[in-house]
Image (cartoon, rainbow, N blue to C red):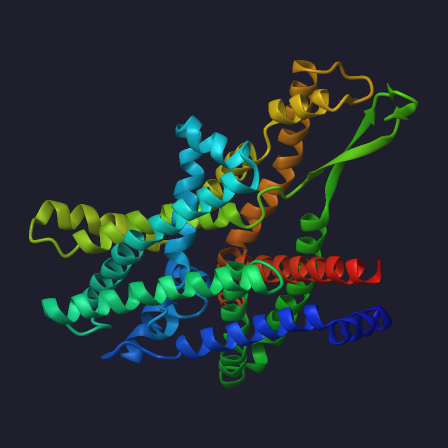
Length: 424
């Protein structure tokens, strides 16, 4: 294993193109971390730490901001507007046949236009989220009351930071290795590990050593489970019919169609967080309303969402549902069956056409059940462990662990592909 690792490292160093790509990624992430350390003025650091510690959702949102929310930096909303815009565009494909055709049937050019629409949508969402979070933080006395001019200036700075980070992510995707947005989130998670470890050292309790060992064992088991589920797939055998063209005989080969167990990746968790964001923000805002009925109703909603078990149940349910939803968007059995029939391919023992479509639909439904349950349990695992042991997750929770493992596996695959091209 170590020999293979060092061989790949040597290939990266020797291959000028790959070396430049890796160095570009490192340079971009360094720029991001420098920008993430520049705070907006007038922060009560102690109040912010206490607020984040008592709010499970904002702790998870800090993951997707790349760690910028924990310091209220100019990058405080991170890539969240871009992710939200991408989610809205994905949902729009269900309602708009034109967008669906653009995303699925018009090839790379169509996908480029689709992504461009996502970038346009990111701009207004950046301003809306920046304003909403500033109001929320003002109500909790973390940010001082701002007049109209200072509020406008802070909103513009935060929105500009989000768009700059989106641009950096796009550059990493184009000129680096791996997905830029995922790598930015990954860098934020990794950057938070030293502070979490130092906090653990200062709060170390000898009486809790068995619980700490349990957390370590759980982390190893969860990491192995994430790797296994991420890489697991259900192969569907496919045979290409023989075709005679002139003097050549084409086809007659057998291969397989891989159906991934975790077809949706980390997207359902992001969907669930985005859906949970709005009621919590709106309820927190309305809790300060001068109308007694509105304020009391909003306070009830806030107290419900503050309950870890109610929050965990909603989180699990949304992740489970969105796993099926996103899988249905990205994998259409009818379209796959149609493409197989066009290329003269068939699944042995299954009639082409609608029968193949029904067969693939049944298989993907069963396979997705495993992936949906796994993602749901992984998402709420920190809440379950904290409820059982009374100790918060030591370093990173299940959601962050899934992102870290997925990003590492993706980067390793991209590097393997580059080194394979070089060897050939």
